[in-house]
Amino acid sequence: MKWPAKRPDDQAPEPAETGPALIHALDGFLAAGGAPRLAADNMVTGRGEVVHSFEVDRYIDYRARRPMIGFFHDHYQEYTDPRLDVVLEHDTVGAPYFVLAGPEPDFAWESFIDELQDVVQSNGIVITLGLGAVPMGVPHTRPAVITTHATRPELIDRVNLWTPELQIPSSAQALLEYRFGQRGLDAAGYVVHVPHYVSQVEYPPGAVALLDAIVDRTGLQLDYGRLKAAQEATMADISAQIAEQDSSEVLSGLEEQYDAFARGAAQSLLAEENSIPSGDELADQFERYLAREQRKNDG
Image 1 (cartoon, rainbow, N blue to C red):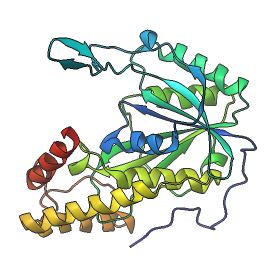
Image 2 (cartoon, rainbow, N blue to C red; image 1 turned 30 degrees about the horizontal axis):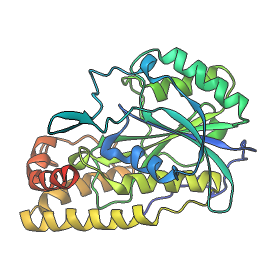
Image 3 (cartoon, helix red, strand yellow; image 1 turned 180 degrees about the horizontal axis):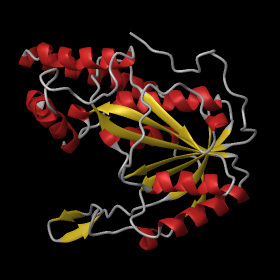
């Protein structure tokens, strides 16, 4: 089952972008399933040029997100320095793009945005594209759904199935897009909906959906075959776990509600009483799967 990702008339909007894009994925609030980080890791080749490094001491709360360091017998070594860099990369045919990836700033959001604006304008970047992921009441058996947003309507390039009006906690990425819009700079973003019962472990299908959105919009030629292979393996693992736990009825309730929402027969992705299991019930059903995945990540 697949729903349209493009506009109803299947015509792309008039492109506003005539130069390179900056894709940003900050590891913090909008990071369900690690999808933005996985997508950014795929776009950073290791051969790119760092065009700007943020002074992380100004922006990071080390006690809130302690970097890892190794302890070997009687000494410390292998400290992982937090980095927040803007990197110039090129796709498989040489087209340029910029990537900003790393920890979401804890402090001085306005200063961070001002500093990034200088980078954007001095490097001829015509649009910034944010990647995010949120846990939602969606089943993994349906195509990943993305909510897109932008500083002006002409930059919206796909239909949103979910169109809420609500107050949410802000993030550095959200404020970045808002401030850029106020200043006449083009900015847009994609948020993938990650099944809430797997949002605490790596979920490659979410990363693949985000990269698909970037490729559809920019025309960049990106190689993410390994990520697609990881997506297939993850889906197989989840299916095996459902079969092992005999959880098909649990999943079918979520599928029914989601399908009703996609058809317009339901107004919300929130569960109605007695219609689908609660988040806690789903978490219980997938407890062994999550524990197994966590052991994989730790090992």
